[in-house]
Image (cartoon, helix red, strand yellow):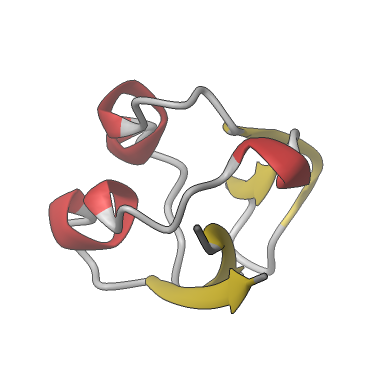
Length: 75
């Protein structure tokens, strides 16, 4: 059976660091970055890239549509 691995891309400049996606992630792979964007917000990043299943919960809940989720199958 093929395994699915996910990856997200965050639009750092648009992210306001609300953290809604962190609580929506069932795999606990998101966290705040230690850096800030141009507006002074700590943006979201993947803290555990191997744990992402590509469920897209973070992208669906993001109020500013800053997250794009990609999924890839592995044999």
